Image 1 (cartoon, helix red, strand yellow):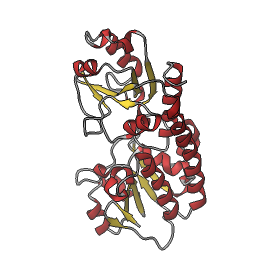
Image 2 (cartoon, rainbow, N blue to C red):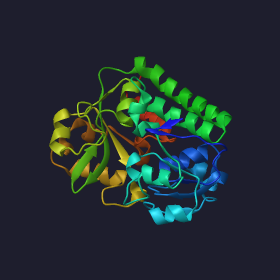
Image 3 (cartoon, rainbow, N blue to C red):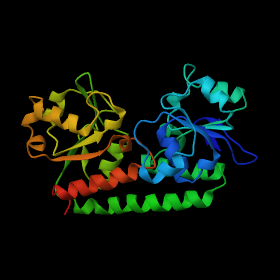
Image 4 (cartoon, rainbow, N blue to C red):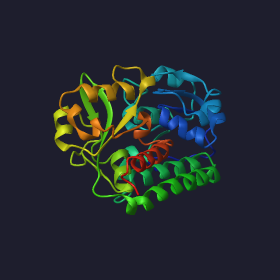
Length: 297
């Protein structure tokens, strides 16, 4: 099997895997692999309730970014990450360095889309991760069950496209840093969810997952709906959905938008705006929010 440019092969299923981020941690927990996990790291928010008991049985090597020393001390036989950027010299080491130590590493197909070829959506790539990990750990039946469960949610959302009323535009507000908003651009999971449901991401013309924009530019695009990501447990200023909504109401240009005045806002867990085993939950929240706002018949 190939993982973002590196060939992986296993004579037997890994028994001491370490995960470098919350999304990969929860994916392995969804596959029932907590007994194979030698450690987790980089928790951004509370673990989903359905994975909490399993998560509590796994050592937390670092609540933030894992170091190379901490990784090696855990004596893993596989490292899994949702993001290629976590494999750097100043973190756990590059994938080449780890391979030189005899330690294989896996990167989510979502973060290496060129490996997926032309055509697949972020959801398709996410489901491919489950298939790949099922093969690596010899739990193909669990992976197939998870894929089927999530595919049903995705297909149900897609079939609702015909029920969308008019051309609906949406801004996905992920975070606010130093007073400036970060929104979903083209190619990321929010863009995929918008297209799947039959609405338009207002910043789909920006070829970047999470571009920094201005409040004035959001106002100029005058979205019908604003989706706010709640990252309250991360704890940075402006992370909670309530803080973001307060900013929208106080910011001079944004406060005049119909979407803000009429509270045409959908709140979702911020972590689920990125590809993860939990993203189908936000897909459901998004569809239900559109329905409540009258954009879906």
